[in-house]
Structures are given as C-alpha cells and as structure tokens.
Image 1 (cartoon, rainbow, N blue to C red):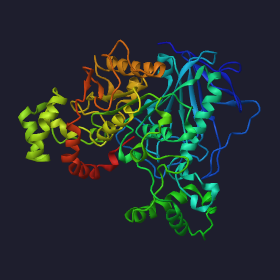
Image 2: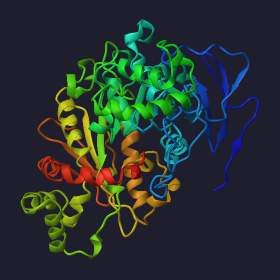
Image 3: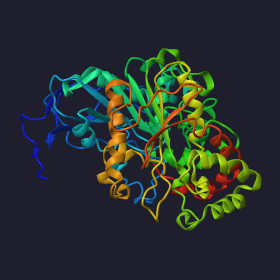
Image 4: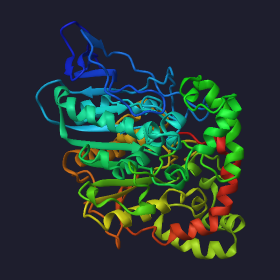
Length: 520
C-alpha cells in the first residue's frame, strides 16, 4: 500500500472557539493531536482555555494524567501498551476526521479504561482512531482528563471552592463534551450525533455521565464495553476529610488544605499509597472514584437510572473471560475429554456445583468443554445482566453483546479483558495476537459494522449478522460474537448467578494471587 502524508501551512487547519489548530493529513484523513479543551487548578473545576493568537500546533499527543504508581510491563503480547509524558495539565483531546468540511458525520468519543484511577487516551495501542475514521467515515475523538486524587478527591469539607473536587475528572470530561458540541462541526462532525464508547473504566464513565445532569444533551448514544462491575463502578462513601487529614500529617502540612494544591504530585501520591491501607482497613473514604453529591446522582444500583436519559440508546456487553482470561490455565482444554473436564470442575468447585452448573454451561456454550466454565467471567457478566434488565425497563433500545472468541495463545485462550477493543476500532492489524486466518477479518467486520451502524442510527443491525433486537427485562437478546456469531436469548440467565455463587470464593483467591497480571 502506498501511503500519503501532507503537512503544510495551508492544510489541515480548523477553527475552534479558542483559535485555529493545525494537524496533518495521512492516507485521506486529517489528524489533530493534543488540542487543549480546558485548564484547571488542582482540585478545582475546569475552566475554558484562553484564546491563543496564531495557529496551535496539533501534531503531538498532549500530556496524560500522572499515575499513582508506574505500571509494571506485563502481558504486552495480549494487550500492547504505550506510555506517555505525564503532567497535571492533561485536559486535551485528539481528533481523527475524514475532512474538515461541512459534512455532519457521526462523532465517536472514546473514554479510556483504567477505572477512574489510571490509563490514558493513548495507552492502549488499539485506541488509535485512524482506521475507525477512515473505514467508518466517522469523526473519532479521544479524551485525556484528570484521574485518581487529581480527579476524584472530595475536599468539600474545606469550603465551597472544593464542592465538586470529588468529581473533577468527570467535570473535565463534560468540559471536553462541551468543546465537542461547540467545535466539532468545523471538523466535519455532527454535534447532535455524538456516541460515547468506552471499555472498563471508560464504560463506567458513560454510566457516571448518564447519572450527571450537567452532561445532559451532550451525547446521544453510549457503548459500554466491560464497564459494569463492582470493581470499577463503586462510588466513594463518606467524605474525604479523614483522607485529607492523614495526607497532611504524612506530608508534614500544618492544617492548611491549600498546601495540598501546591505540593508535588509525586510527594502526594507517595503519601497516599502509605496511608491508604490503614484507611481502607477502617472502611474510610479512599477517593479515586466518583463521589455522589448534587452534581452526580450515584450509580443506578443505588438510585436507579435518571429518567432524563431514558431516550439514550445503549449497547452494553462483556467478554467471555474478562479477568480470568488473563490468568494462565493449569489445564489443556484441547486434550481433555468432556468427562475429564467435568472431573476438573468437580475437583475445583465441588460435586454439588458441578451437578448444577455443567448442564447449564453445556446449554449456554455447547461447543466448549465443561472445564472452560472455570474461565467464564461472572464478575462483569452478572452485574451487566442486572444493568441491562434495569436499563431496558425504561426504554426499548438497550442492546446486549458478548465477545466469545478464543484467541490463538497456547492453543486457544479464553478472551480477556480488553480483547474486543481491536475489533471495535478496526485495529486488529495492530495487535498480532488477534490474527487467526479465516476468522479475524470476518469477526472484525461484524463487530465494527455493528458499532458504526449504532453510531449512525442507534441500532446495531447490518447485513453481516443475524437480526439483533433490543433487550427487555424479561428477554436479554445477546449477540454472541465469535466464529459462529449468533443471537441468543437468556442463554446464560440461570448459569451466571449460580457460577458466581459457587465460584466466587475460588475466583477471589485466584485473583488475589494474580493481581499484578490484570491489565487495562
């Protein structure tokens, strides 16, 4: 393939409310990186950036939010990463567009994973927006925003100026969405047709925005990928005063909360990691997750979905293995007979569990060996089932999916947390572990075309898959994507709650032993 690159004084220029920006053209699309959408003092609400003179050079990714701990390289074969320069001035976004013209294309806004504590808009190599933009003919935007203590540290006990410091990161995202509303038409996008999509913490952020009145009207649809789980959706309880007191004591600050605004981030992060275990043991506020208040209404589990968002279609799903897909197996499923697989289930979960679970598993996944039940996720799938029932009770456009393709690692590994991202972005070419002759291209087209159809119409249907109806509280209509993509109704409705009951304690121990292997 012959590539085309153009970077010139009179090309790839767009006007924003803050001034002109210049990117570059590559293979028929225009790319802008690191555009600032806001600025903020630590713990304070974001503010508009000041208008600049001349043209802002938007050809380099902007800073990403500082992390509490440096990541340890692991699992790069499964989830290739890249890390970037960290700085608190991280309110920036990236845009990929077919053209800066008058067309009104669907806008896809990516919210990255890592919970509310880690990650960045460019951390996962599969987050690149070029292919989605070019092949789907949509405008793609990815956002950096404040995380961890910088984005979610409730200091409201110290005065009104900190009233919403516990949700500053969400406030940043809303500021970015306001920037998109005000500027994206100049990048060839339709501000009335904005679809949020995000995985893990990114999916949880979509739920948070649904529960935040200030975000109303800023997006039309949402795709929540593996974003419903207690591990990533838990709201902060109480307030941050005890945490602030502990931090100041650890840092030698004599009671003036404002000193936390100016002390180095590295010192604050180190102090936090030191005091956190004791506070956690006492069940006290730890920050780093959204804080229910007048700004944010809390998770749907706590207070139900806000009816003001009932008109917003959602596409919600999980991956077959999620966290368990990352943990190395102690058996070779390809060499086991069905009876041998059942025997391992008996040894792992007990006779009674095997007796109840095996028939349900065989009905839900008839082509899998019963032993593969031990790698079936329930941490995400169970709350996602509940989420879909709750959401579909208030509208007729809540769609369910499951990514069910084993990946070619060690003879076939259950798909892990993040495994579906390359297919959604049409980026399997960037992730070698996705490649399986005769499978990858077809499944990528099925998933990608569903995503683009949903962004255009609010429905994920297209000619390459079976008809996909919306779910109801009684019938979860799940598109099970895999080698033989098919629609299943309530296929695991009885299985998953029982799996959680019997395998919960076992899996908790395994997870504890493998915590460092979990990637996002």
